[in-house]
Length: 410
Image (tube, rainbow, N blue to C red; front, side, top):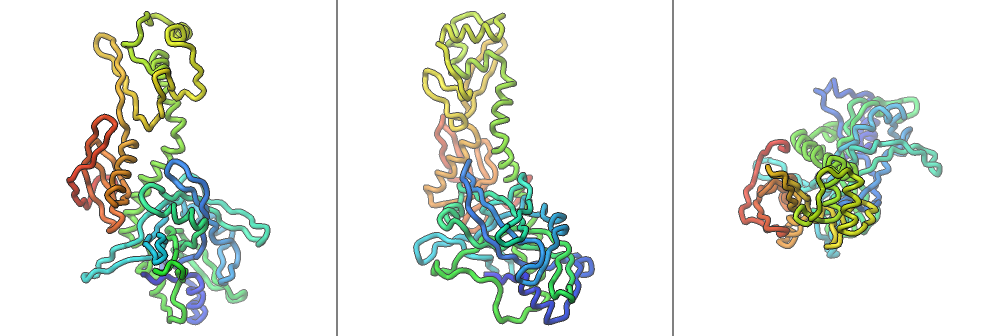
């Protein structure tokens, strides 16, 4: 487990060593890296995502004798958007799965392998904001994020505990010491990300930050103790760009569905609503306007009430995305046919279930027509695996190949 240092540790170092001013520009553009201990609160669950809220540091002087002014916070708080939420999950002696800490392993050649993996993301869409807490008479930074429910036990743990302690990494670019009021002023910074903290192996002893009683040097606040090396950070941000695209797609789902319907002509819309094909239509449709088409369908197939346009007909129900997509095609003679296509989202959900049955809980990065890329939960490595589709049935292939690079991710 890595040692991580907090603002308290930096304050102690500055006071004991008369360290009064810092600028990353004077130190090879290398910031001071430290952690702020906060807490996550589980909120609503939807579309495979568990919403979480983070009440982060407040503006003004903290109990740890550091200070971020309101103007400075307003200027830099947007750096929190799109940042990763990491977690290292293990099975405790209690039999429950828990979060651990900033976990890593170093092999004999000195290569670092990170145990903590992405379990969520701070929202790229919702803006961080300041909220006044009347009880404490302070303004706190509030951010919202999402924990992925599909591929790890992170959401389950958060829902069980309701709140979890977390470590917010801050990269300090400018700071100064206020000798008159005896506090550390953080003047320029960026948020790097969040690691959810939990318990020791016994499942009862909370993870503690820092190393009490140890001698701290300025090197302890360098990039080497960051939970994001530059290489790891770049890979995470590339991955999170894809995840943020997915989150935006969730939010635009209703709009997109309406857009598709608007692009269809009235005949196609009515065929979808009544769940019929051209072969089922034994009356003349050519030359009919929209109202006449609607009346003709009502006469031959019965009058329907479509509250939400979900396409439920006499022959069964259409559950939307879970049934795949309808594909219309018109041949050279003008005849229209309707076929079903199982969507990549359906396939992805099936792959999660199939791999869970094998005892695997991966993160699926990309789904293609006959293969998918995933990250292993156990070792954090990336693999390509094939699959096949027969109707609505999805089957895993036996071909598993480790991949080290593919376009758009690594």
